[in-house]
Image (cartoon, rainbow, N blue to C red):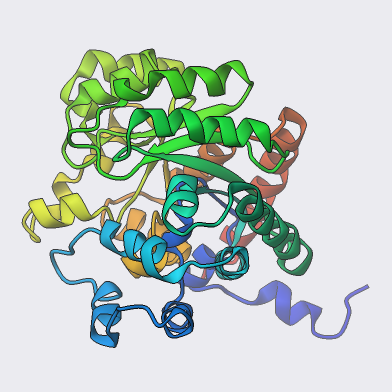
Length: 362
């Protein structure tokens, strides 16, 4: 039996951008404070009477041909705008609402507790509880499943990384699945944080690390894999400097969560050669498992739909590769095996059904 209007739906065709919006996605590399909506930033600034002019806020949300990094914005949020756990609830809920509208069905997102506790003066337990509350509310309202990754501030003393892991373990909840490390990699190599990572691993937490970002050498990726024992790598582009290590990472099936809008390569590669020389293109060619992400979506001015579109538009990947990347995300996600296999089946069927409706199959 065909219901009224059902035939029209079955026969309707999708444009590529709508297909990319609807396809199921995981987001494994996204920083909570890099998701703040412009209007929310303004509201928080007004509430706290922060010493941040509107022109400065506008500059935070402006991304030129050679964009500056976003870390200054994240520091400004910690220093001037976040004053209560309710602020974190709002930011988290809005991020998950926005992500779900672009087909993200599962998200693991980063949060830096050191800044929240030491700078924003919000106790860890209260902050974590607010974020977890938003995770539950967003799942109920939008159907998106998400998990939290407390992340080490590598610009702080390594002792504070250990302290952060202690907070996580003292207030452990199922929604916190592992730890990461971010902020500026130069002068802050991964080996400084071995103790915090050992504590996390021994407690059964998953681990990831930003490494090989900012043009830092491939040895930082090696250190993250061999010394810190990470389960996956965030960025990792300079791994290409050592083909033997690339092969080892490929054989181990390590997932690299890559970012098409990464500021470093937009700044350092000429515009006419940016796409053809970007490491993302060659990482796949060398057999590495990659998965595209937004990183700081509102500050990079990118949505999940646009990030996946960039993989096709700029780096030349086709729909077969996008399907592979989608499944890579599930393989690298910190979920139980039964859920992984169920979602692999369901997401593959959804992708294929949507693909069959493409107006001009790519």
